[in-house]
Structures are given as structure tokens and as C-alpha cells.
Amino acid sequence: MRLGRFLAAVVMAMVLSLPAGMASALPVTTSAGNPTIVVGVIATLSGPLAMAGQDSVDGFTTAMRQLGGRFANQEVRVVVVDDKGSPDTAVQVTRRLLEREKVDFVLTAVSRAAMAAIVRPLADARVFVLNLDAAPAALMGPECGPWLFELGTPPDAIDEAAGVYFSAEKLRRIVVVGPDSAVTRAAVAAVKRTWNGEVAAVLKPRHGATVFADEIARIRALAPDAVLTVLTGGMGGAFVRDYAAAGLKADIPLVGRWTGFERPLLAAMADQSLDVLNVAPWSPDLDTPLNKRLNTDFEIEYGRPVTTWVAQGYDAGLLLDSAMKVTGGRTGDRDAVRRALRRAEFASVRGPFRFDTNHAPSLNLYMRRVVRDAKGRLNQELRGVLVRDWHGRDVASCPMRWVEEPTPPPGATTAKPAATPAKPKPSAKPGTAPPRPAQ
Image (cartoon, rainbow, N blue to C red; front, side, top):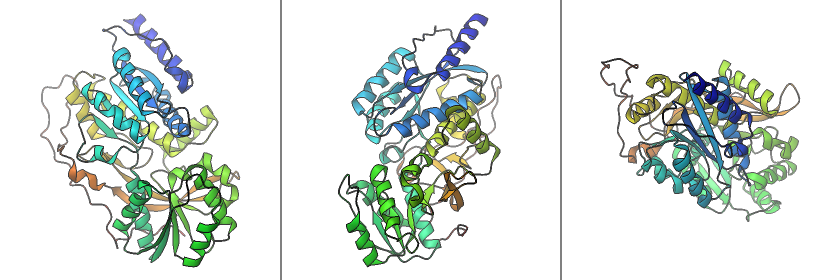
């Protein structure tokens, strides 16, 4: 047994020391009697979405390093696979994890299409899935299930929080800029749920645009109180540069989603990104010991700044550790594991965190502003809490209903009576104003 534990510890150290893309190739086997907990990670590690996937993996790896490669004093083996941004590849690597690795848990950081393709086989295999990206909305609503837990931040949460900001600032008219897709339509609908003002125009630049002279001229002519951008990637950065170059930034505030303004993306926008506001579920300057430790350890290990994707992956490690402590490191009783996950008794680096009955997150949403920090680096500055304890509206259409059933410690013969969780608070309503962000 001692030799087995020693070998498992060596394997874990090897896995954590490898780049995420290499971990999947490590030839590791375990016998049926090996108590090792196996965690599979399916992430997009190549292609245009690789930054989010790699950051999610590295955030989880950071948590594992801090935990000594163990959950509840039980060795953990991590197997990372790359779906290469393809739903078909995601299905293939999922099958490999299930057949060869006998995983207890799977973390996913993939596209919505890939998630839709793999969630059913994972559920059929009775594997708990912790999703680190935005899941298809139906999976948090009518198609919710007992095996999927959402740790990512739903886009609706961000857009509803933006509406709360517009209400708090008493803004009457805005312009929305986004792709000609369901993404923009959903953003407009979410903003309107928490803000009673007028969307003066929805501008939809052509796909791949790098120059936005027409959109800038239209914004100037409409003179709205603010502009909401849901553009991301290269288009998002180019729009910010054109917007600043046109001199609009000082007169018409520009507000965006966190996904377009994470710190590695700011370099391409340079000083044109200064003072742009963005809504996020995390900020690098959240003043908690845990957040400070994450920033320090991650930057030392990887030589790059922490992002919200990193924070979400880090939270996944802490959540799993907390659940395994409740079950004494045992994964065989799946009902007990599920109860422990639902309790979410861990200190999230993002702030207060719990699950609603559809296994979607209830969390805080913050307003950030792009600034230069004391070291002269482009960074994010926390401006205030927009929404506390956000709840998604999909919880009402999820057929799952459960109560918090305290899991007895290993060896205990009795349990306390079940307690019904507090009824979820509704999402912020139009006209309700949180404390105004600092000016």
C-alpha cells in the first residue's frame, strides 16, 4: 500500500509538472484497488479559444498544487485532453476518458456545441461534470440534470448586471454593438430585464471587421448615454481602438463584458482601453487573502496574470476538495458526493458562491475599470458590486428539486434533519439600484 501511494504521488507530481497539452499523453494506469481519485479535464487547448481553455486548466492545476495533489488526503490523478475546438473531437476524447481512465469527475472548458455533444454520455456514465464555461441555457433549465454543475458565469448574468448599472446611473438611452447573431439578441433581452431605458440602436458590424467608421458615425449621431459592446476577440479590440481614437470615450461611456477585457487582451488595445468599464464575476484586486495568494502563486508559476478563467478553474479544485472532505475521500456513494457538491462549502476566490437547485451558480457581479496599476501595467480596478447573489431565471424551468441534506461524517450513523435552502432571490428588477460604483 505504501509503495502504491508513493507511485501515485509521483504520478500526480509528473502530471502537474507537465504542460496541460502533454498531460493527456502520460501513460498512467491504476489497479482496481487503487484509491486514487481520477479527474478528467476536457478543454480547448488549441485554436482561437485556447486562452480560455488553458487558463481554466492552469487555474485548476494551481489549486491542486496548493492542495498537495490530494483531496481529503486522497491522491488525485488528473488527465487533460484537448478537444481542439471541435464537438466531434470532444466526443472522441470523452469516450477515451470514460473507457480508459475510469474518471470520477470531469471538468469541461469547451464551446457550447461541444458541451451539448458530451453531456449526455457523461451523465449516462454517472460522472459528475463541473463546467467552467457557459453551458447551453437548456442545461440549466428544462434539460438540467443531477450530474452537471455549472461553475462558469452565464452571459445573462453579465448582461443583466449591465442593465442594473444603467439603472443605477439613471441612463435613458444606449446603443448596443455586437455580432449579427443570437449572442447580441440575448444580450439586449437580458439588459432590458433589469433596465427600463431605450435601446436606440443595435449595430451589427460585418463579421471580421477591423474598421468601424460607420458604427462610430452612427453612435456620434445618436448621442446615447452609453454604449454596450458584446464584441470579443480581434473585432472587440479593434472597436475599442476606433472608439477611443474617435474621441467618444470621454463623452459616452463604453461598457463591455469581461470576456473582451481580460488582462492578456489589454496589450492589443494599449492606452485606448483605459477607463473602459466591464462587468465581471471576479477582479484581480478583490481584497481577500485567497485572491492574493492565487495572484501571487499563479504569476510566479506561469509568468502571466490571473484571469477570470483562471479563477473559475481554481474554484473547481477548491469545490472538489471540499466535497471529498465531506465524504472522507470516497467517491463510490454518488448520492453522498452530489449532496457534498451541492453544499459548496468552500471559499470561492470570486466571493460568495452557492448553487441554486438547477446547479447553476449564485454569485456576485462586479464593475471593473481598465487602469494602469502601480507598476504601470494595464490592469483592472474594482469599482463596485453591481449585483449580490445573482440568480438565473432558468432555475424555475428546471425540474430538479432538492434540499440541503447534511452528509454525516464517515462512520456516523445518524444525520441531522434536512434543511430547505433559502428560496432563491429573483434577479435584479428594473428600477432597483445597487450601491453606486465608486466614481
